[in-house]
Length: 213
Ligand SMILES: O=C(O)C(=O)C[C@H](O)[C@H](O)COP(=O)(O)O
Image 1 (tube, rainbow, N blue to C red):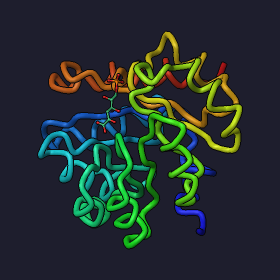
Image 2 (image 1 turned 30 degrees about the horizontal axis):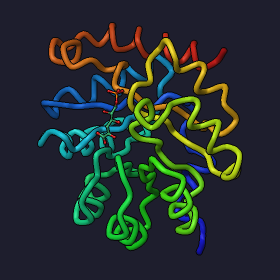
Image 3 (image 1 turned 180 degrees about the horizontal axis):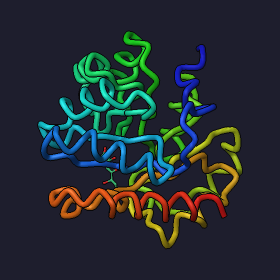
Image 4 (image 1 turned 90 degrees about the vertical axis):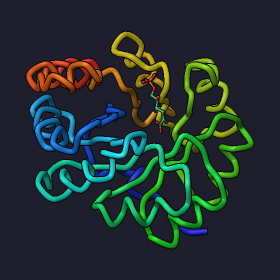
């Protein structure tokens, strides 16, 4: 099978930290995108957890072309075409189903499925994925799990997400099989709700600097 997610084998974005974002009003999307860029983060995972997610993706895709906007929490096949139509340049999911993978292939949308077991990593590789999201990373075994997977499945790369923070992100990024990390700590809901974009830039810069070490 051909490589399905080339964008995640050689990501188009430069940031090795992927903010996982819950947006509650589409108007938050564009200022947040600018604030993250200002802090050196050129990728966003805008989740579909809130109804504002889809219009938020649309806003960023339309108004902030230098931002790589992805759709997160894509758990149903029919959402794949919808997020692509909204302008998402890739999709992520906490898991992997045949239906989701088929939908991503049909749309030719780069997709990062979620995995938690060696069997799921192998199934993802069979489909042609080279980079997968380890979710929930902490509960899956964190660093120890990544090291263990690196033995038999050393050709696969991971984006651990779930329980990753400023404190432990450096340890994750040092692992040779970790391509990038994801997390919600860069965009706390209360900070977004009050529109404190300077604080989002500060958090993004702090993460960018920690990733560079
Ligand atoms: O919504 C999704 O699609 C997910 O995969 C879940 C998120 O990635 C995690 O909830 C982030 O975890 P924290 O950084 O620990 O908050």
